[in-house]
Image 1 (cartoon, rainbow, N blue to C red):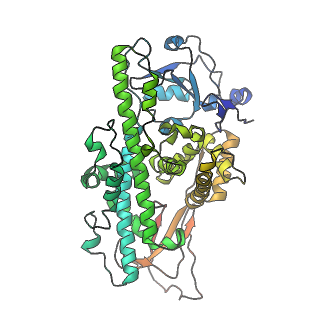
Image 2: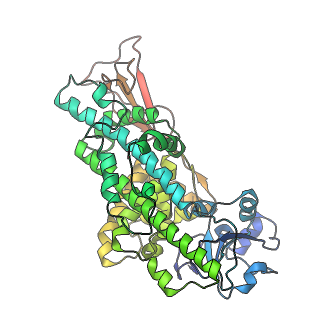
Image 3: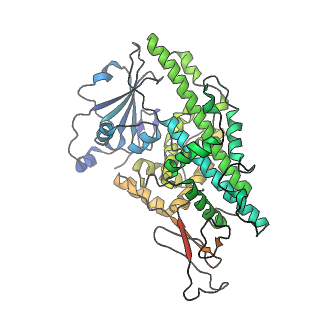
Amino acid sequence: MLFGRPDVFGNRHSARVYLEEDHLATMREPRPNVAIHDIRDPFSLKPIPIIYYNAKFGFPPPPIDDGVLAQWRTRDYRAVTEFQLRTRGVQLDDAQQVGFAQGDWIAIIPAHDDEGRRGNPDQGTIVGTLRTALYGHCVRASRVLQMAQFRSQRDRNPHTRLDRRFRDRLKDPALAEVETIFREVSRLYKAPEVRDNRARDVTTDHFETEGRTDVKEWFGLTPTAIQSQAHAEILCYEQIYGPFSYDAVAERELHIISVLRRGHLRAITMRRIAREVARHQVAEGKPVSSGTKARMAFGKEFDLNLWGCFLLALYGSINSAALYTEFESLTDLFDLAAWFGCYARGDYEELPPEIAVTLDCCLSSSPCHAVSESDISDLEKIYEEIRYLAGLLVGEESLRGTAQQAIATRSPVQVAPLYYNIVITPSRAKPGHPAARIDARFKVGKGQEGINLSVDYENFPQMTKGENLSVRQFRPLLW
């Protein structure tokens, strides 16, 4: 049977899944002695090591030989899965990956202990992950705004064509909003810890060079493919998202960029503080001081509220609690948001059981996350967004059933995505063609497999013999 219990991750109740010994015995042979895989972090300011253990094996039994961990008086144990290691920026090599899957420990050791010992390169990847997400979403946002602007212009003038004013570039004032939001946010961050102006400032080069490379890595699509899909989704915007509004599209896209930019700058700043302080302490053999810890609370101008942290996890695929520790009690909620983001990009097709527990809770009639009074409205907004994403990407009832299956079997379950289908007219027009429109006879179809379209035969003529249809199928990208 499954049960939730307080773990030592913040001394709180967690949605992580533990297996009882009788069920574990039916799955595999008795476990051998637990091995310890050390990852030394020379820039960690934490005074004790973090022990990550595989949640599906339950709380780890004490190893016969603590080895390097014997010197530490206290350890922070955290039950996680492979997906959660990823959202926390822990990168494992092949041997560590195999060991973790077998139930070994992953020990993140601060390299500057009281004796000032030096360690190996660090494991953090959060800064790099957010950078890739940031530049990928900047390219995506530029394509979405281009198509939304074209749609807005054509609504006012049906003869508007997709000419050079709407080409794949950021030179036009309306499309330069993406660059503008970069500069507006960057001006907020004049803290001395962010000393690299190239990390603070931005030019169109970020979109025309690095962004084009990162968008392929993040979305698995070229910028041109994203533009084509953006046009297809803008065509059927009303049937998927609601009445079309350029202002609503711009507000959403630019807010995403703002949130990712803030999170990225905070990660850069935390990283720089940790690097410089840890180098000094390692060299001098000094422990972490209270003043050093105070430097990590570097002002409200770096903060995101609860809704912003949810969006950071959703679009950045990292656990926001790693950067905003005041929301550490909601780490399971951020894991769920990161899973939605990875799934929407086609980067992760399974629903892990620990994510399923949180999802099932959020889709229930009485979710049980606790927040301060000032964050209640943001939490309610998050619950609404989770239900919306579940319905948009999979179907709420279908995803709820998958979650219950993952919980019952204590193992990841493949999730069948919801595909959307539209008929574009004229039949030989590509989605990006200026003349492309939705065929009025067909509604937007959706289903887990195949093509599901309905035809309005009462108000529109039936198909003619030999008529060709141009069908576009996609998974939503521009939500």
